[in-house]
Amino acid sequence: MAKLGLTATVMVAALALVAMAARLAHAVADDPKKVDKWFNRLSHAERKTTRLRFYFHDTVSGKSPTAARIAEATMTKKSPTLFGVVFMIDDPLTEGPEPESPLVGRAQGFYGSAGLESLSLLMNINLVFTSPEYNGSTLSIMGHNPTYETYREMPIVGGTGFFRLASGVATAKTYFLNLTTFDAVVEYNVLAMHY
Ligand SMILES: *[C@@H]1O[C@H](CO)[C@@H](O)[C@H](O)[C@H]1NC(C)=O
Ligand SMILES: *[C@@H]1O[C@H](CO)[C@@H](O)[C@H](O)[C@H]1NC(C)=O
Image (cartoon, rainbow, N blue to C red; front, top):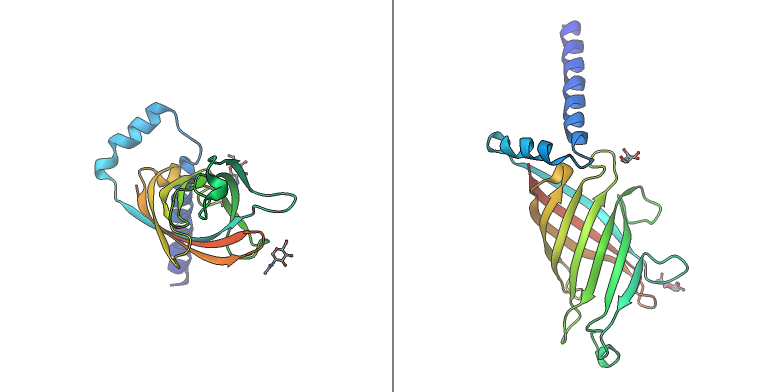
């Protein structure tokens, strides 16, 4: 009985290693032939679902901001919604809401004020993961972010590595907003389907 238990434990550990190796296998971009081989096997592949939660730290103020204002429209000064302002970001993504919480990746890309009448952002960002499980894999968000709403739903439009051919839904909710500096911490819940 004890021996069987041990064998089962070893087998589970070995399977976990294989699963991890498979995950890590395409963390670094493959050459086109390997991608093609992977693609041709897809008809037998099972679709996977991954759920993620992390916190997005958008720092626009201070000595080391992670969001930089890169463009604005000439009309921006008169616009109550800052229409036409664009920020490029490289924001840390952490496990918990505190800034010192473990880093799981970064949000790289840009957002811009796309609403004339109300503050609504166009988000065009890549979630670039660095946690051991998803290291090097990415998910891309392209969506409408009406920041005044409690929950903002944005589409996951693709992915790479572990998240190849991803589609899904990201839900953002402001966790903390400094009304003086506009530095923000936003909770993201992501549901992604991929192969
Ligand atoms: C992630 O991948 C990079 C580049 O391949 C490597 O330098 C780094 O150590 C990896 N990090 C983890 C946590 O596996
Ligand atoms: C907002 O930021 C300002 C400037 O850094 C700081 O003095 C203030 O304490 C912050 N407010 C909150 C609620 O954290």
